[in-house]
Length: 423
Image (tube, rainbow, N blue to C red; front, side, top):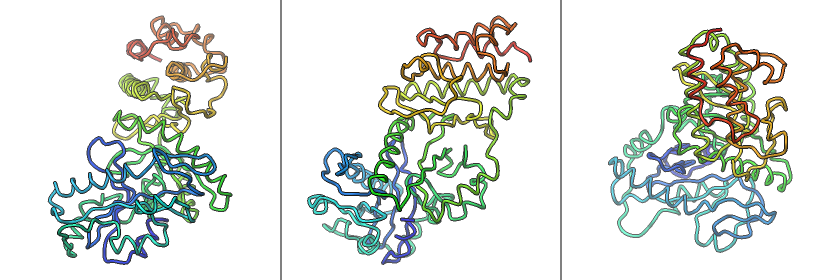
């Protein structure tokens, strides 16, 4: 792993903290690694890029047509934000240097000469020595060297109990060396409280280190385009929507993910159908949280496309997490990916060739509730006609309208109808 290689070879008596989340609502405020050194603090961005870079401007453009956002402005901002945060907490003084650098790996990455002259960019082989020497730290003015006790205090303050010096990032995912033995491993399919007590949904993608560079680049391009659509959800702060991390597993650690599958995953709404039918307060709470999640999706311009009882995770504290986000898409159509939904669950307008929309998610929720109440192979309209409860039939019908513009945009009527319904 990049972090472990960096730490093992770091040419100084410092600490490396993995996956530090900057405080506040700055949605890009994640620092892959923070090196706490006697000579100063270094914010480190780790990129798993391949190939030859032709130009660095607003985007980083590769020779095969792949492009990604320029990481350097954001990295500079993170370093300044980190410095202000540490000074504000009295962890460092005004004369302690704080810098930043980008580390790429595995393999060599060809950068333009002007980038190498103006930015601190290292591969995994040279990074430990350069970072240990503080090559990227500002050298003007007075400088303060940090003692051992100060280094320990800063590292302890930065390191979260569950994602500190013993946990490392691969891509956007915290991988703990003891992962296979933790409750987190047993729950990773849907939920964990592993990164500063924030719920995380994992999407595991394996990049074959032996594949051709163009194949690796296509894989990365796909991952980043999907992640861009999901990133807007970060600002919604909806408790029912987990933060999504993409996992780029190191081949040596990939067995951890498959080992976790042996535990069968967490409880889902599909498994708790009987409770949904008989417990009115549980039913209302679940639908209220689904409604909040759908509102957040609309605000972020995201279409879920895969809503169903099997992707609704039930948490021990009464909350739900709406999973299945690996098949979500931007509502503006910029993310073009196939969904795995069965044709019988696809909204009528999508079957007819139209694009996905938030109205399609409302259709999916209506169909999900109908499946829980009246499971069967008959088409939804036939099952709906057999419902004797008129208010409930009307509320579900408003969600299952064939015309997307005719569907309701909230679940209030459905919740009201189900309060007086009994199985």
